[in-house]
Length: 388
Image 1 (cartoon, one colour):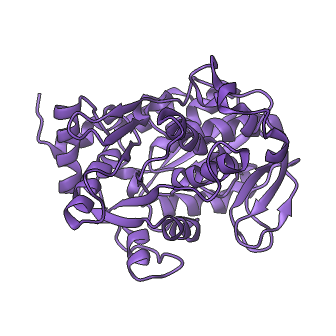
Image 2 (image 1 turned 120 degrees about the vertical axis):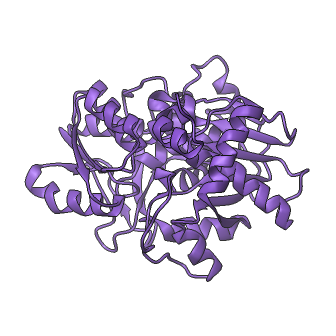
């Protein structure tokens, strides 16, 4: 695995040692990026280095933290060409351990937690991060303390209990769960592993960017549609593109994808901030959507997400729950992909941006399905009025 050169604040640029566990920048609360000595890897770690390596995210171990990974086989998910449109690819993250893309980030975070000797991890979650943390903590022999909204999809709750996690169901949103973790963590001895309040979940998620490049033969697509709650994957992929340029795998200053942040119309803080040309989002009031992972009233690193949209020439778009569940049904019946509601939002958003002329049908795009529909059986059955 790679040796961490330092951690860098995403706001002020402060460099902090990675020798001890860190959360956020002590100066301004900015999210921390993990930095490696990429110059030393140039010419030594190349695309040819990947030949014959295991089809997991750890095939990129030179740019991942940790000495010994706590792995369940996460990553290198299929890039499926659409049967409906030859220029569309579906990156199916539902085939990860615990059925979602959250496995990547929590795998990296738990790997480093074990290396640091941490004994108790706590997370607020809308569902899938909770089950991923519970699984990796079980594999690592670490206590998992999970706070989830009480209306979380049943599969997430059952998984967490089965993995032996300590689960608290909260009458509220993920923001209310986060408040409870923050209030209790010091007294309970928990290390908080919330979205972008520790540096390693981004490292796991950035492997999606490496995979997109590798699976498309090192030619990046015109656009990437990413369901955006906390936005870790969007931030991680942008970091991956930067790293690949520094490694010489991609041309410096070359074409990068338009990054498209997809949200639900019942909870769209990033879309609102984008449309109003604001650098940060406001807390979304009365958040509601059946796509649980998109029910994040204010992402912690909203300022990074909005900056990436601007840099990439991308945009932020909200789709309704009706559009989302139509897309769930369409992907299942036309593509054979049973997507999570959050993932299906990518398909709905792509349709809208084609209609609006933001993209052309000839543009090569990647739509992220962030999780398996099997995690949402109760939610999808109700939405599609499916009865036994």
